[in-house]
Length: 440
Ligand SMILES: C[S@@+](CC[C@H](N)C(=O)[O-])C[C@H]1O[C@@H](n2cnc3c(N)ncnc32)[C@H](O)[C@@H]1O
Image 1 (tube, rainbow, N blue to C red):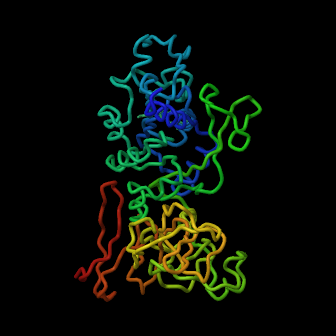
Image 2: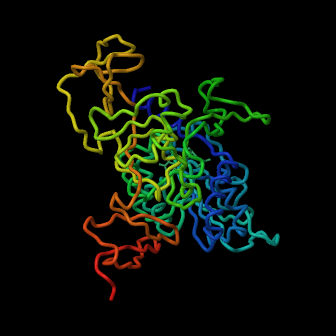
Image 3: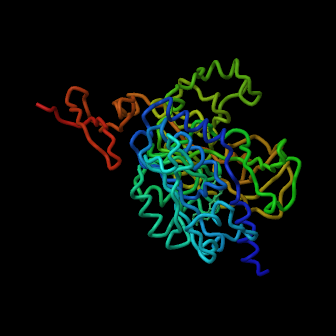
């Protein structure tokens, strides 16, 4: 196999992870706890979901009436276009269906639609009332056909192929839809994703980024069962445990819970973290910011910029903090180093490659990765740069869809001269925006 094919096959295999019912339920419940009518009268699209395999379609079909959904559309990707599927056999459901077509079953995607019509005549609308047909093309989410379904939809929910996550995110944003999709936590710092998080247009779902999520893996697609990353359920299904988060622009309560924090002095006195208790917080050598190694060690009384671990986003409350950038190149560093020598566990390395995004000056080289820049600096893992929200940071608290939110304030504003204007955005949401100049 040519190298590129091998890589394609490997990444395709990595795309075949099927989401557990309980994970979908937990996430959707968080949106419904916030707004019990969230799905009411909405068109919901599941664009990478064959109901025969995917729990997403089954889940939404089961809750179709209870959630008040207007129309559910689920599309699947053609087996012949999917290098992750080498052993495709149509199911009995498809073969016995009047629409079955021997060639299209391999070449074409499928579209499944559930509307408020009891086709089966059993007195309820559920999965038995799904109507299906072959798509014209292979069901690629980027196709004109599936993009048109996205444009018809109000809400898109799925676990898309991780290998196409950047494109998938761009496709969602282009469609100006509400969405909730599963991705790898690494995607947080993708250039297609991070600016959206910064602008408060995308955030993490209820689950956050901690721990592994278990996905079913079709037995035929398992290269090797590894004890650490796989488990076999009582009914013989193989599941892979991988890091996954939900990326969404749907409101849920967790992101409006304020983080309870201690002052810097109290952190130094009482923090449960050895690296914080009894030590001074350090400034970066190359960013005008304070290094904060743990989210729960963010000092409540520090008004400057702070570098925090990416898992901060699990607790991020936009009413409490603003996200300014990351140490990955989208925030201005204050220093460029002429030379850098990598030193690991005190030993200079032959190769000096390695990111030097945020570094902290130290007295001497110690355990872990350091750089010699004429003096020792300790390499800090990727960090998100944040700042407390406060009047002194030039922000004003206003309401967004009835939820307290924050908008930047003109620097020379006086509160009396502000008028509050109602603005409706492209998604039909109302924002109250503070503007200079009074209304009368
Ligand atoms: C990670 S799996 C998840 C399946 C299902 N959404 C679930 O969570 O159970 C991603 C699925 O996307 C589909 N897929 C791969 N490439 C695609 C593409 N370009 N367009 C649409 N779907 C694609 C594959 O069929 C694959 O099963």
